[in-house]
Length: 270
Image 1 (cartoon, one colour):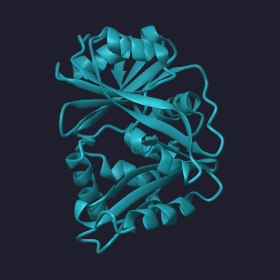
Image 2: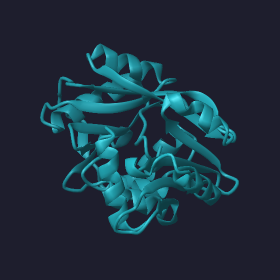
Image 3: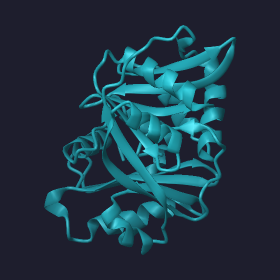
């Protein structure tokens, strides 16, 4: 998939209510340039999917879309099968529409929980121990994210955690020790948080409030795995509303994460 095709596909995603960020395409492609697939001519694709190989043992499937004019013709499923081959023997994860779980099971996926999307205003607070990300932070932040998820997204995060005009990462730094971080990005609607990674829920709250302050008081959107009970409770305590849930599924063994407090990075790339 070419960069121009991905921009078209992200516009489709926006029309479907997925609400991508303004500056997602470059970081997505950096994760695995060969992991994005489209059917149809480059200037007018008709279907798309991504299967991003994050590390030697894990890939993530997302952006599975077929243009409404071309649905029901088998194009999407043929592209699905072609793209899954890109993962080779890796475990493949996805956050899918719950109503489509039977179709995912037919391709070898098994349910492993859900992810909840929360949205709402959060009381902001700057925090004296919050600072912006620096290049020398990246190895440590990537290691924290790897521990929180059970797989490495290093290629993606090296770009994702580097600030742009519409995306920014804040670090919780206490006495020179990184206790967590949060990335916020401007989207078609509001500001999305992800990833948010912290060692305790209190530190997660500090990062969430810092993100709210940095975002200027508008609505925040955060995707929280179902097994992150403390972070789910924090979002609910803040009055954030759960707009929808997705089905988290894996083809192959589920990754083994460490007990950190963490949101999803993106629903498209895990």
